[in-house]
Length: 119
Image 1 (cartoon, rainbow, N blue to C red):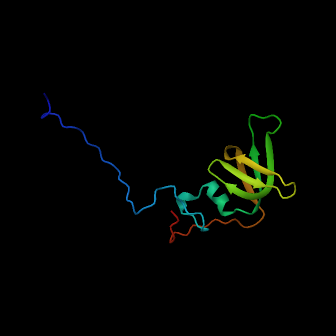
Image 2: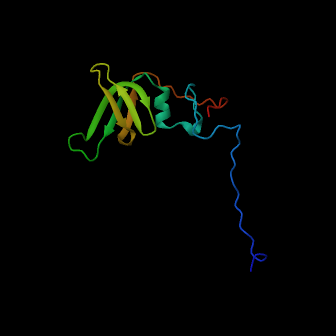
Image 3: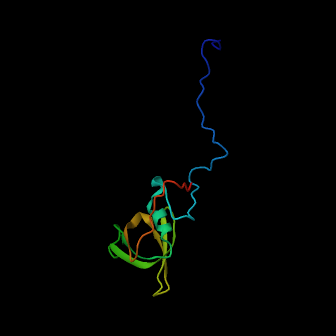
């Protein structure tokens, strides 16, 4: 009845360019991160193999209110950190949500080379 009066709405679409890699595919083989990728987990990945102290707080625990873990960075993900303690042989899988800060015994790898893209 009103087919000629009301037009069907159209919406713009984002069609990805096949020559570009999708967002989130980051190459961590380099020691450089673009400014928009300087998240904690990426910085920890750049420092894999280094000895650290990681400071955690567990607000819902009376026994473990604050805890310090010492060890070597093995892996880091968006929501977790894996460290190994060479003194005890223990490995820890720690959730990032409870992380307060990290201290290093040596210089931190953290570079912003704007001439090289690592997407």
